Length: 84
Image (cartoon, rainbow, N blue to C red; front, side):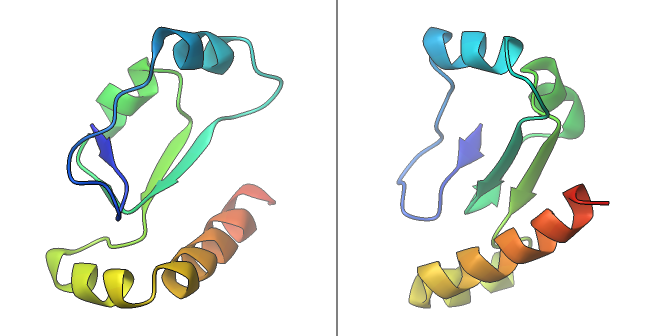
């Protein structure tokens, strides 16, 4: 599923969260520590985009060393993508 950097295992959407995704006003974008699902899987859950803070295995250590900084940097890049 979608795995946050600080979590020890995958995180699944609850039924209530899935309903929120279905009845939203705009796209749902996920920024997580790591993303282990493909576009098809997260798209089926109603997620328009899923972005990993650590895109490659060699980036995990840096993301864990500065979680706030790496999350802020990734969020800024994703925001620029979605604001076009």
